[in-house]
Structures are given as structure tokens and as C-alpha cells.
Amino acid sequence: MPKTPPGSQPDPMLREVNRLLAQLAHTGFPPERDGAVPHSEGMAPRRITPTRSPAIVLSGHAPPPTRAASAALWARLLLGILLGGVMLQWPYPHQCDLPLLGYLGAVATVMLTGAWVAFASWKLRSGLPHILSLILVFWGIVLAAEQLLPRIGYAADQASWRCPTELPAPKP
Image (cartoon, rainbow, N blue to C red):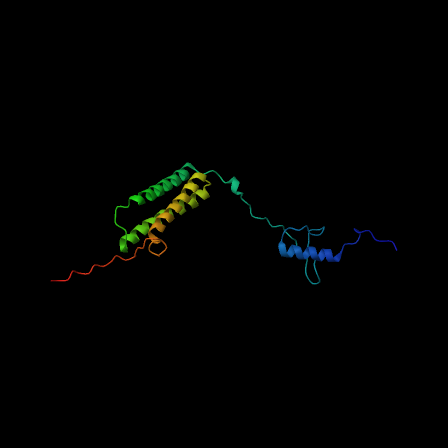
């Protein structure tokens, strides 16, 4: 018996697979010759329109930052570095109670400023401000650790969260 050439009769299974793939993915799979999806019993044929995929923006092709955005980034970074530097010269006692909380709040501000500048510099693709902002975050962690570690028992020196209360002197 002679074999029939492979292209003479369409494979019914192939048509069904193509139809199901077109329904599931809507990838614009090339439909049958006339552009209609083959229909099964009782269903009318329908046309498949290819869907467009969303445009992909490559990170290397981002527009360069404007001068105003760069100036604002550097201003935030310099103010954060200034705040981090003056934390060494904190003029108020901060060994315990509310003054300690105020100092730790200022240290948290240093860390938040560093994180804010890090995110902004990452978005603007500015390398040097990003590195400096990460150093600023690290500096805030060092300042916080200097106060927190003695209070949680991890350092050789022990410190307390609360100020010691002085008892009144006994009357003679």
C-alpha cells in the first residue's frame, strides 16, 4: 500500500491542539488558513486577534536625570551627612529616659535619610550618592548600636534605660 504524503490530509489532533492553545494563551498562534479557529460541534468559528504584549523598558535605557532631580538628591545627601556628622557633637545629655529617646529618634532620622537618599539615587541611577547614602545608613546603625548594645547586655559596659532615682537624704 502506498503511503499518503504527510501534508495531504490535515491532522485533526493538530487542529484541536492549535485551537486550545489559542484559547488559553491568546498568543496569536497562527490560526488555520482562513484565520478562524476550527470549531467543534455546535460552536461557531471565531477569529483570533493577536494580543500585544506590554512594552518592556530596559533599565539601561532610562532617561538621564534632570539637573533639578540631581541637585535635590545631592542636597538631601549632604543634609543627611551633616546630620550624621553633628551626631558626634550632640550637645545634650542622653544617658537615660526621654533624652535618650530623643537621641535615638535623631539617629533614626539619620538612618531614614540615608535610606531615602538610597532609594532616590537608585531610581536616578546615580552611583556615588547611592554608595554615600548606604554609608550614611551604616553610620546610623553604628550610632544606634553605641547606645543600644550596653542597654541590652551585649557590651562590656552596662547601662540602663531609666535614670537612677535619688533617694532624699535622711533628716538628722
